[in-house]
Image 1 (cartoon, helix red, strand yellow):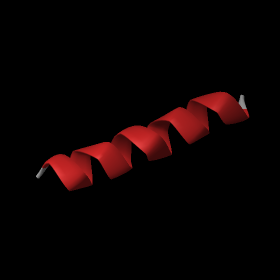
Image 2 (image 1 turned 30 degrees about the vertical axis):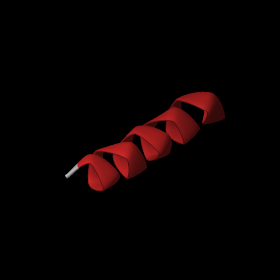
Image 3 (image 1 turned 120 degrees about the vertical axis):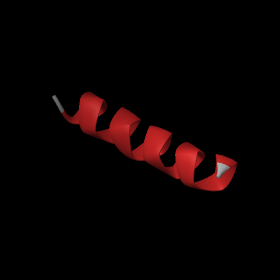
Length: 19
């Protein structure tokens, strides 16, 4: 269950960097 949260945070960071 934590993996999903970690993945979400990683994707969020990637999105922030992309933009």
